[in-house]
Length: 410
Image (cartoon, rainbow, N blue to C red; front, side):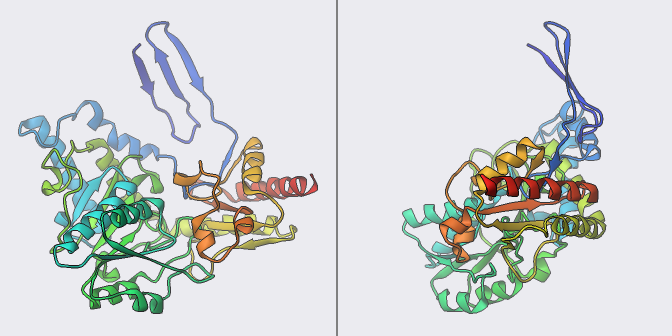
């Protein structure tokens, strides 16, 4: 079966059509009347980003490691993308490594960094208890291999206090990992202060910037970090492409073998269309970030005003937070029931991080913040994006109120 895809507007105003060559029938996928409030999980790709990528699927299809003309055109595109990303985060080109996404970048930073530090006699790793599962998995793997791993607690507001790291760090600590922004609560962590503590004791500092990148402009130099990760699909770019920044002079072990790509540290044929799309999406994201954040604040405000009549609703997390990520506890309502009821009415939300949404276990982030299992099972995450409207915020609030009232009644 041969399938030909013709892409229209990615938000659905122009449909995606699929022609099956064996029966010459067209299947039309219409835009669904839905309000998407799960941007912390993923975002729809911008049409302009897709346009930038398309030539590298068919016309400039060369392997970026091939020495002939088509290969050189591909590698030139990769070099341009690397230079773009480096400029946007205040790094050098040779400090930017492309990966398959945030999960790979997180695994590589923690495991590769820890392995390298062990050669110096540093076999102790510190991670926060609220990290993404990709980081926690890496910590568990290291424990099985003989590393000592400490998981830093957070306070009730959801962030790591500097004094806690000061107490946990030792001369044996080789790596400290604390995310820039928590993906479930939107709480911004004091990364710069924590990085200074780590560096003062000779430890590397890694921060997962996946949830921060869509909303916060940052410079790796100003943050003082040794490694930083982010992923394209969080800011209206393609899935399957991410970045790991590694500061020059920082040794990190090779993570994917079988090739000499990414300066010999990450094997595998370069995803040229993905890399091009990531750079384009991130450039657009940074260019429009201030205006987008102001818009998102207004939408979130409309939503919160719309649900103000509900009793027993509270916001999890405090201090400095992202503008568009709300983690709400709705007393007396099971979060999975609420998610599915809202979904049936065309409103998409989440009950935790997307990578763990198939699990019925309560959020490890909320438990770390001091909520009980029962309380954590009453919490949902609502995350707004620049493609939402204030009208959608108001409409979603109206549906949210009616649904909660219905679930509480029955």
